[in-house]
Image (tube, rainbow, N blue to C red; front, side, top):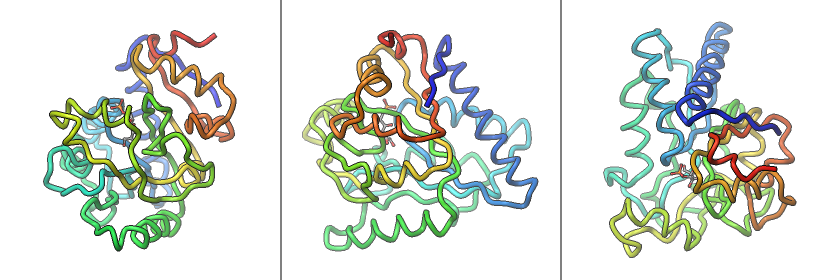
Amino acid sequence: VHNVIFQDSKQGSLQVAREIASLIRERADKGQKCVLGLATGSSPIRVYEELVRMHREEGLSFKNVVTFNLDEYHPMDRSNIQSYHYFMHQHLFDHVDIAAENVHIPDGRISLQDVQEYCKKYEGMIEQAGGLDFQLLGIGRTGHIGFNEPGSHYNSATREITLDYVTRIDASSAFKGLENVPRKAITMGIGTIKRAKRIVLLAWGQNKAPVIRETIEGDISSEVPATYLQEHANTTFVLDKEAASLLT
Ligand code: F6R
């Protein structure tokens, strides 16, 4: 695990977008698919913006790209503008040449009764695709990656979880009030994420500085699930100066 600290989030995002683009091209040159694990939220927006620009201006094609998103609120309709389904189409999928059948986002419409089986199927689809070549992550103030909140097992799989209170507070302005934030979500597990061949975690701003310090310098613990990444051989934390400001 190592950290790269950029002057600002824009520079960091450009660097990450370039890495993703070269992986996509490298695979395409060999006639291979490129399997990407993707995140939502504010942190990756500029990465997606740059990938869209490269598609438009530099001929970057997504024809060989297969994607699996980390998480989705549950229950959540696809047409809801708070849904991660909506977010991903708005920021990336509607603007590139990815095949619809190659896009996978946990389905927030699944019934409570079917959710367990659905999660197992999602996990199986990732495996069938050959596993994640690259996983993009943000980090929550609770130390969650995906929606693996404190208490998550290091070997957890895709499952339904209960969102932490702090996570719901952080989402409350987008939902125009805490009472509107779903209490549950479907998320890839820590085990799912850790099997990715390459992991890049983005963190921008002072707000993330305390959890970034704990994640990088703290003991590995289920209390801060992102610390599990310390055991992953090919993880980079991409930070801006503010997010890195409490590192010793
Ligand atoms: C989103 C996800 C979450 C976010 C995290 C940070 O798909 O899995 O872990 O990455 O909550 O969110 P932002 O980037 O909005 O600070």
